[in-house]
Length: 328
Image (cartoon, rainbow, N blue to C red):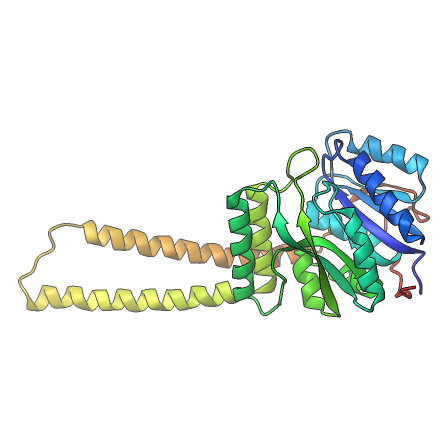
C-alpha cells in the first residue's frame, strides 16, 4: 500500500513552548518548497508548559499538523516511536523541536532518498554551544558502544534522519521497551548514507538531555545491543577468584613455613573491600539485564495516548501500518 502523503516529519516535544512556533514556520517553509504532500506529526511527551495549547492551535489552523498527546511523560525515544507509529508518509523524517538540527537539511535528505538510499542520517561535523565535557563523553560513548557491539552505529550522529517507509515499518514492529532508535536503525540494515552539517546551539529553552538522562540512554544502548558486559563480568570474576586463591596460598605459606606475622588487618580489609565492591558491581550489571527481561515480560504498551488531533482514525489502537510507496 502507498502512504497517504509523500513525507511525514515526526517531532517529539517536551516543554517546548518557546520554540514550537518557530519550528513550525521553518518546517513548513522547507516542506512547501518540496512541492509534495506532507504532514507534521507533533508528539507531546507529557509537557507541563503551554506546548499542548500551542500545538492545538496549530492543528486548528493547519490540517497537515497532527498531534499525538501522551497521558504522561514516557521519554524521548518512546515519543519518536509513537510518531513513527502514526506517520503515513512514504518517507519519515525524525527531528527534534529545538532547531539544533536544521530543517533545511531535509531537502538534501530527500534528494539522497530519491537516489535510492533507504536511510539518510545527519552526521555532525561540529557541535556549537556544547561544553567540552559533553563533547568528550559523547565521543567516548560512541567508541565504547562500537567496541562492545557488532552493530555498526555511526559516530557523531543522533536521531535526525530520513527513513523509507519500509524501514519505519520495520522499526515499528520492534516493540522492545528499552529503545535506542539510532542503534535499531543500524541493526535493521538497508542502504544507508549520511549528510554532514554543523549542529547549532539550542534555539531557546533548556536541554532535555541532562547528564542523568544521557547516562540512562547510554545504559539502554549498551544493554540493548551487547551482552559483552555479562561476559566481561564472568572473566573478571574468574580472575579475581584466581587472585584470591593465590593470595590464600601465600598466606598459608607465610603462616606455616615462616616466622612472618601480620602487623594488622589493613591489607585484609583493603582486599575485602575491593572484592566486595567488584562483586556488587558485577551483580549490578547482572541486575540491569534481569530488570530489562522483567520489563519486556510484562508486555505493557510502550505509551498511552490521551488525545489525537487531525488523524482520520481516532481510536485507542495504534494506527494501521502502511506499506512502501514510490520515491517520486
